[in-house]
Length: 55
Image 1: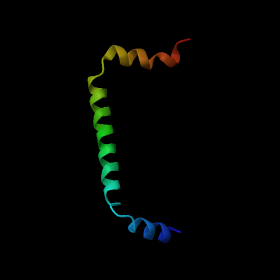
Image 2: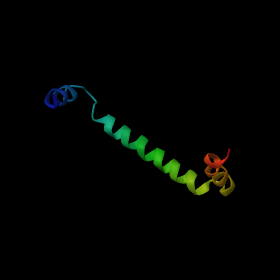
Image 3: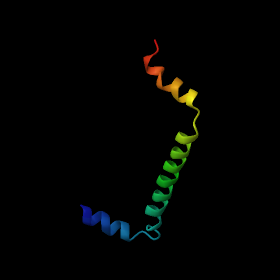
Image 4: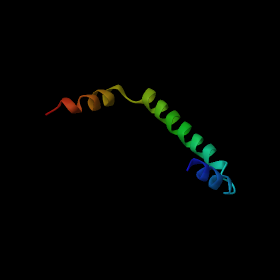
């Protein structure tokens, strides 16, 4: 089964770009998330963290 998928993927022209695009999207998402975590206001973080405890 895996051999069939490998042969099929090798026959697609330009398939080598998809892993690179996936890596760029993954890396960009986590860089933006990292930036947001360090620049978020402390009041907002406290408010959101106490939401599950509010009735």
